[in-house]
Length: 198
Ligand code: G3H
Image (cartoon, rainbow, N blue to C red; front, side):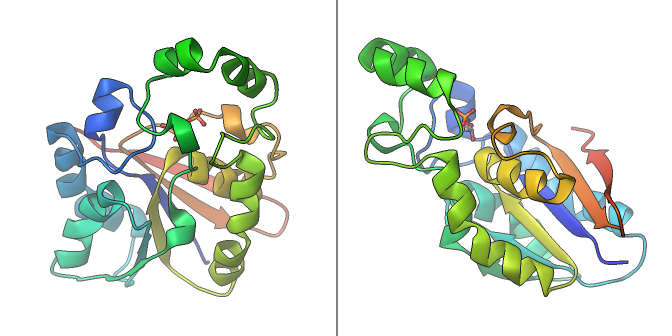
């Protein structure tokens, strides 16, 4: 059966400092995840199928996928701008505390309606769902794709396959350093998770 593999990028320097957005490098721990990913993927695939890697255009996803790309199997790789993280506009690079201090109304508005709230000069989750439509269409006609992208983007893709209402998806936790394998069946999608031992 066709499956789709999903992963967040490895822990980034911004994850450590609590800053959102940006284009940071992965941390030392993120690097461990990048190195662990080829074996984690192999164990989840179960046969010698070739996968194709889709990343965003941001460094943290490309760095996370690089051993998968360079491994003996050498999976092909495609970078999609449409897989970039939700654009947080003027709040890019800030911590949640800094956003609460500098843009208190925005901070509250987002908490009240996280799906529809659009960052000043940036995007809402609703915007991300719309820009993901071509990705989902391409995914539906492809096989054996592993997507390495960002939490907000993964929430939307995951919600699509797991039939979670998009209004709820902004609140879902997508853990770091965990590979998610989704296998669509006739009436539901089967999910398996593989946590890296790092
Ligand atoms: O790490 C940041 C997430 O990708 C976006 O988080 O939409 O819950 O603020 P948030």
